[in-house]
Image 1 (cartoon, helix red, strand yellow):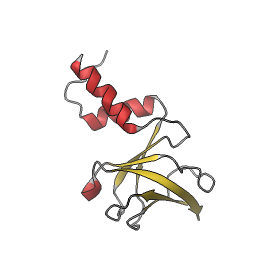
Image 2 (cartoon, rainbow, N blue to C red):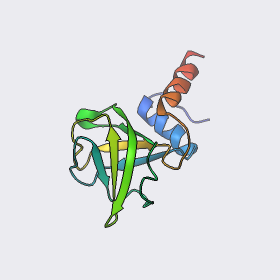
Image 3 (cartoon, rainbow, N blue to C red):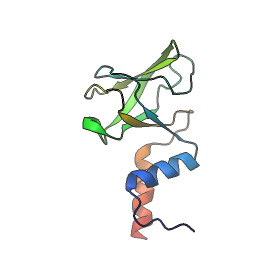
Length: 121
């Protein structure tokens, strides 16, 4: 069993999400609006197929914010995620986690709670 001491909560959460195939780790490709994020590396999908996912920002002024994706679109190999409520407009290089991006019903705060339970035990 690998030693986990020294790993951050973010690293643990992302490791769990990746092992469950429940999270996509992304970086915004360009500056967007206060309710959208643009990523040209997110695997392409159909219109609104990312709706219902959870967007968690992992750096910059939005670090830690959790937002619900209410729509998505793909134009010229760029995926635009529309989220609510609004946040500071994401810029290129802002990183994020997209939970439930393949239709899973896994809320990211459940992962946080699993980590808390493991620490307490």
